Length: 517
Image 1 (cartoon, helix red, strand yellow):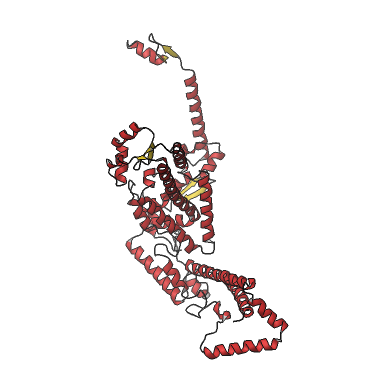
Image 2: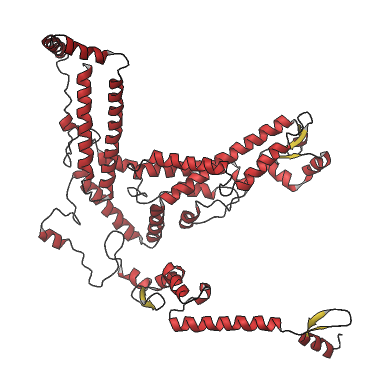
């Protein structure tokens, strides 16, 4: 193909890609599954746009000079000769390859109807790709699936056993792990698996938000924080490593004493010899699979060896800290999915076996209808007015709606006491439905802000108090008692016995009456 014709074809492809992206952005997906299919399709279009743009720029640079030769041939020679030459080349090509298909760019990026496969770019079995992309627990990217990470977490040494619901709230907290635990191989593998899962989840659920750019920004922030020694949980550790490395390189010729198990250098021979009998050394040696007695034979090492070991330890610390940083930052980005996962797990724990089966059947029917291209029974928006009226939810008791838009069971409504109203005057006469929501609101911003507006700073002592006058009276009483205690402590009369012991007057008189002085 001539270079100028290839350039024209690339420009046409870029325009059609741009129009295809604009058409799909204007769509209104009816479900999360449809939205993900649309986003991933647009992401494929964007990737193809970048590839075609790179090819077009390379042709315009013309490193071989063939493009300029074609232009010169059209401008300096007879255009008819060039035309017939290219025509003969095209006829000769189709004579040799009579069944060669022709790419139809107009049809390539056209939106297809459900169940239709027109060979469009990035449209081959879109919903099937989305179904294979997520597990059943993830529910098309709405929730996390950290069950495997939870199992690995429970198998870490010296870790308290917690439920999956508790794990969802603490998996990004690493302050409870000690330094020996963090340097273990199992902990490193656990962090690697968890960080890779969160990165994969980000790429699968947000393909249009430039996941690679987000991850690169997170790594740049980590490098800057590590150089400034501001990584949470690793600031003090990195300082100690650098000080050790400097201190052990003062005398290059003098051999130093270094313990591999304890990862520590010793300047005194007696201290080094006696530390082999300590429990700390034996425990560290057993943890690393070494013989505690054999470690004393090769303890004398040069300053260069000690420096290398310190650098290796620092590199390992950096690798562990980098994974912890990634997990923390990705969890902040995926905060909505994390909260939704905790809510979903708590909801599933309250369901009966029959309700779980009904939920699975409803999800299967919904996915089957989407795969077959059938309209949905609820919330379709494409049926007639009679169908919309028939699909309205029957809720005469005004029960709260569950995650699927249907009323919750009546027994669950009664179990949580959602029909009981709890008004709170401090919150501006806001009414909380159910005891659970009422107990929870005492730690929320609305109630705490209401107390601060009344001049109350210590909010922990005002649980179960909802009236403004009661809160003011209790605060006045607490302030009065505090002043009385302070005055009594300042005006106490002290006495001194014959031995010089100072005590309050009341205690002195009691001891004197008992004859103990």
